[in-house]
Image 1 (cartoon, one colour):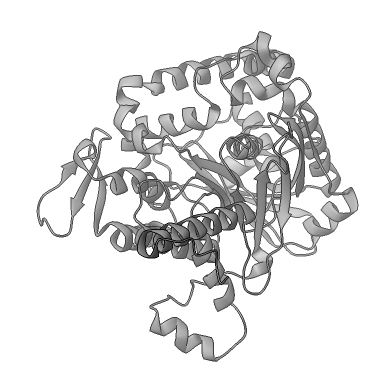
Image 2 (cartoon, helix red, strand yellow; image 1 turned 30 degrees about the vertical axis):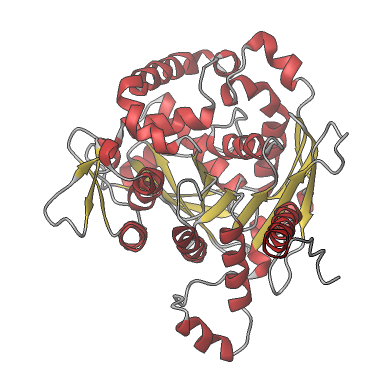
Length: 467
């Protein structure tokens, strides 16, 4: 799906292709990258208000364990159109803005899709869709085969307690399954915000679980009274935390429960923590994060006593080991935060392996090291036999490659100093990678200044390049 956003903060207009496996946001500070990422996350992560004319036999699903139902592309496209039309009304739940300030700050926001119904229907019908839909600790395996609109829904009975049928379950499951199909290939979304190095430290003091329980109770209480009342309640909520940070705090506050179930990518998460941190990120019975370094056998340290790299990367490790699902979009704001250049380079390689394993990524970065390594991984995907020997020589894993068709790059910047609005440009990704002009310009200026300073200090005159 191509998502068009207009009048979001300093962003006048931008279009993002959400079908890419890896999306990269680049640009100077204050150009709206985080705003755009939060809007994308909220669109993919929240429940939809539109009730499709789809009837699921939930009773049979819980009793037998599997049902099949035709879910036509037309109904799913209606969900997308309706959701995007309502989306600007949810701004108070995304950003910490009071309801009376909404129109002043976001009154002109528009969100739409550039994808036609014909294109959506063709993509839907010709896709072999496999999605895991979670409802709390309960899981449902959804499969729509190639060239069909008949969907198989299988209830995973491995949960500790069986589900019981009620109107709330019927409502949420219908919405969730319809949403997963409508937004495919993005099944859901998770954000690791730039505040992640503090979230595991302060979540217990903030005690977001009480807030989550209250909101869930109100959600269930209002549902039987109709969607209008439910929508009004959700829209009117305000909070001092953006939605993405609130979600991260809730995860941190519930780690003891989250860590009881391994994700399909658990072993990969273990491999990554050893590769990047040379140790193990653990979660104790009370839900507290600790770190056991390999070089201090038998010892573990509290999160507060761990290094800044552990604090920055622990949320990624927890996500991979316990939360990650195929086609889940993971958004990481400034992945390079607190990391030495060698770990930034290794992290770029981890990103390639993640998308090649079926996850999806959106990163917002200022790191020249990450960008240059992504370009190396793009070049390594070329069909050139000699590259295999080069890759082996530099220690690249076979899955550390990125096809250029799988990556979308966007540059956020003010074209001219007097501009009031940011221009968001799609950056061409060539066979040798991509260039971020604002970063290249800064590096060139720094190199020029260093050269002139050196020659003046050493020889007493300005060098002026080759002149």
